[in-house]
Length: 181
Image (cartoon, rainbow, N blue to C red):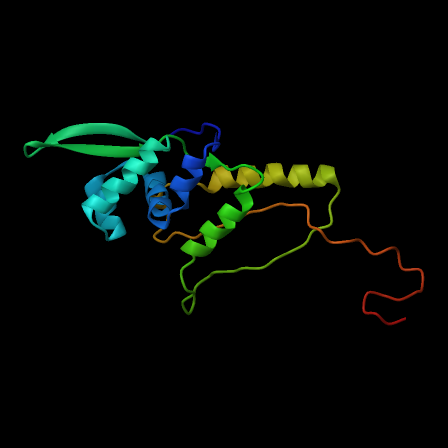
């Protein structure tokens, strides 16, 4: 996986494949590096049969491919990899899918965890919003590294969207931001 553009997910099979929690976890594991069924099984704490079934679903959806094989003790070991470094979801269902995925993988906060969740609203002109979106995309590419950089994974859900918040007209009564004259 190089720095190719994100793969646009178009089929219902692809969305369905990514929608299952085990397959979502597998994709996160395969983002780190190609892996064998045994490695995926150990990392997920599952069974080889279950992992094999879910790898097959991801392969049939065109999201995972066979990266290599090798002979081991009279058998053949298969190593699987993602077909792309990341996926672009359609505008209609993409945001909901990503929010649900982020909520599903959020671990409970432990004392001392640096987790931080907040909702900000920025008042921007359309040109400023486009420029910010480009900066966030650059940040995303700069920060997406292999696990060797750290010992724990942290999720970062970036979403720049036009919020449905009306704009008050200018204050013509001399009332300040505190609501007092």
